[in-house]
Length: 450
Image 1 (tube, rainbow, N blue to C red):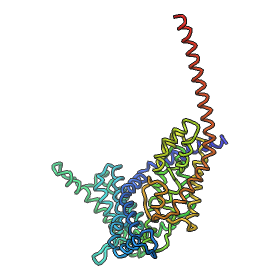
Image 2 (image 1 turned 30 degrees about the vertical axis):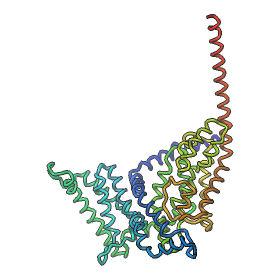
Image 3 (image 1 turned 45 degrees about the horizontal axis):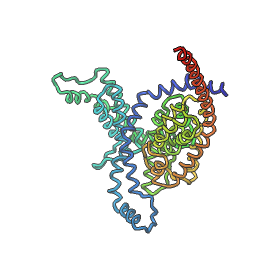
Image 4 (image 1 turned 30 degrees about the horizontal axis):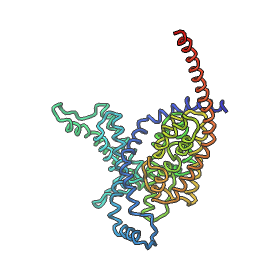
């Protein structure tokens, strides 16, 4: 067993760790992550509006308050949907600007100018203009991959032109703002002369504009991202990286966010249309079923540590339980420690996997509602799970079941580690007692001579 563990640690340190580290620092991964973080407040508030528009109340209810709520929602549906449409419905606009602005900082470009350049690029290919109106069809999840591509492409074009001094330079006496406006003229022209003809050619030959073609190409990949194998692969990658001390969550969510947002938009469209919710693997599923208390689902572990006989574990448990309610578990990960600790390797890897399998089949069988809201990852699991599923009760029950299973799986490993620490504490106490005795024996003769 020890030799197997040694081989695994060597593989992680020499192969997986360096590769994941490079991936995590890759400029496009960082830019996409920052872009989604920038757009997150708008999307969370927009998602929350759906709770008021589609309350978790039966349409047959006769209770006065509930009936009035439903009637008000039905009467003013278009007006109530406006905040949602201007936030979640425009997610690709926020993400496009956010990704380009983040990438611009890495190239020492002006973030505002670069963000606006990206927005123009996206609108050029995704905003169909007809009869004086602009279609917003691809401003939500369906256009997310196009927004990412346009953000990266426009920023790279701008950076390349500036790097090669292909720009309009004005005298130093000209104000900086005016000079920057002229500096970006050539990048704007370059993007228009490349993206617009490409979009026209694509539409002429295939009948599809660029966002539609991209979604058609990625449709198998998007479908595969919403499957149990995809869930298990994402969980295993995240857990193995974290065990090696690498922020696996940042890497995995950076990769999965475009797929999650596209699927979330589909779920919300289905909710608005009164249709069956299609997708399962979304941020709310990831945060509130698989990682209760943080990666490794360590909130139940924190409760176990609080009752440990070992002083070290008991102290760590008390320190980690409150942050754990908000899915912050660094005190547990680094304090126990979990990271690179062979005792906790198996439960740390397997607990989220078991949670994932249980949650997937519970949702797939219709026992638990699917996610339709975007919640903050720091929302406590039972509350977040209910909120993400439009305040359903069954996800709360599933959360507590997952917590119970997690506690049962962690328990024997906590006891084994506790015995090791108790032995070390006893040896330390014995050594300190011997040192005190020797010190007392040294002091006594000197005092008697005095």
